Length: 113
Length: 114
Image 1 (cartoon, rainbow over the protein chains, first blue to last red):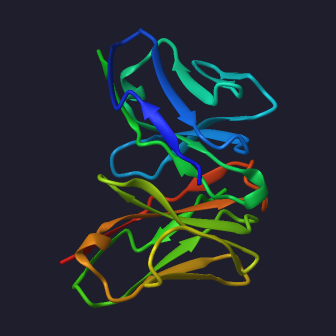
Image 2 (image 1 turned 120 degrees about the vertical axis):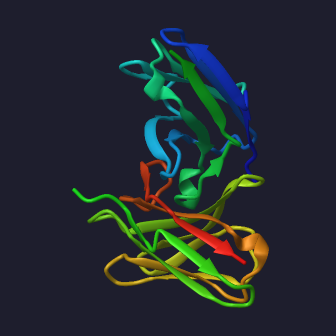
Image 3 (image 1 turned 90 degrees about the vertical axis):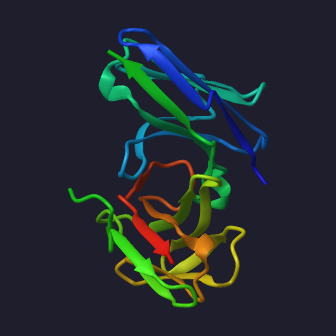
């Protein structure tokens, strides 16, 4: 089955700096890659996603890039703010098989004021 | 528009008991998936239901089961609880049957087995 690896596991940045989280996947059939933010005591919240026919997508301070050849995708957060502190998960799915997501192990991001 | 609602939020059960968790998806969403989240194993897929049919199943023992009703609400059941079943159980709903559409998670049910 699909295997998603995520790095780093923890990340600390100064407020205003950028943060980058990287994920790799193993199954070339994966074609949908969402990113989730999970705050303490809450369920994961979808923050951005990208499909395999797109190389990059941006939404305000958040962007995601996808390299299908290398099978990796990354989350970029610019101008970080303390409220960005949370655990971030990447995921991959194969649309033909339904809504089954394979998740990375998570990155705990701390933004230092 | 209401989000995904999971009940109860917290549960404490004894080893050997069984438990039923409930999930109400976003209105109009017909796909419901369940995940187990633990510190050691992360987020692991349990199963997915669409139009009352189980479409996918993860690598969990048969003690874990689920179902979906005609109104898309879903329940999952765990029988003969073990200490290792302590986890946050998350439900996600999606509008479309294929896996390239957004999935929205509920707050989860925190199950503690003692």
